[in-house]
Image 1 (spheres, rainbow, N blue to C red):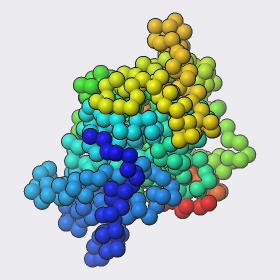
Image 2 (image 1 turned 60 degrees about the horizontal axis):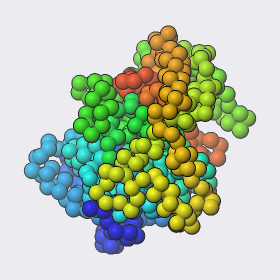
Image 3 (image 1 turned 90 degrees about the vertical axis):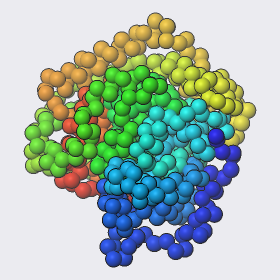
Length: 519
């Protein structure tokens, strides 16, 4: 059942009064184990050694949320059953079910607020239009997380409707969540749409989180907030029960502080789901034994990494600090055994990266209306049932939804679209396929590449239209302290080698540092 429109963080505020006074960051003075910045593997080891339990872990995150969330607005809601679920995990661990110290058992996971949960949490995509809607079942990924013994911590703030209401709304703004702020430099762009998922793990308000990406929405907030984001191959993770934009492009992936955490989360959420047909083909890409086995410190050895200077490394005077940083990163990659294949070119790259030229904008518009209407019609109860209803809601509550400021241009375009039988839609798909085959696929195959290296997330339209995976890893900080990232991307099913490469890079550089909350 959905909860009522109470204050989003209230359910836990009362509990916090009791726990915060006596709670310290260090769980055990004897071992000096600190929860802050601890990885999933370290948390599991602490569970195994009985120096930590899930209740204490959850209390730590609640204390972080209480002290930080009102400033940076990473979470929309905290699960009112959080402490109960933590106690349950502790009891299971004591009883030896499942074996102690494995996977995500007893680990709190934060979900972006467009991922359905059939519990006391709302699923609203940040919009008041969906407040009180009741979902028929857990999203496929939420179901898998629960099966792995993970604890659903709450719902993360996001760019409203995953940034598909209007082209004008700022990154990380939603009516329900307000404006999410970048914890490194509060005035810097936090990027979107999985903004809250990224800043919550960056600030240790959550252990790990899930985001969603249609075009850039995992990779961009990951690099902007100095965390790791994995945009998986299309269909590797289920999109069932996720408020959709496009089944042809939507993906769900981990946003975490480290590559190893992201691999643990990917292991838990990847795989077949009867409610998402794309998972049946993509499941064939999952390696026997999962993804954690690819956390290989010498993972860069022998990997062929492509560099396309134009347009990805055309830095402006304002971003010249990145030129220096990437020269250093290229040296590090070579030093650790990677083979750099430099000065490559991608055919028609400007058309690929321009959503109007590629046909992406046109296709998304047609797909969104159909996908959203389908999602809304499947809800058990909902204030709105169609995209037209959502548009009307926004007009009726225009102050609340900030329509005069940000509008709903993408909604209106989609509502007026003529569907997927339109010849222009078919032409857009054919164009994207041709650009993909003659562009990224050809580049990767002709040069026998394991990955393409790009700075930040300029590569996302190319990955989006082809359903390709990418991993963003912290790569440095601008002179003002704002983070930037390095992105490793590859063909469908390349996750194992991308994890090896990004883990190898992360271990060789260890760039990430906790946020400094600069103004």
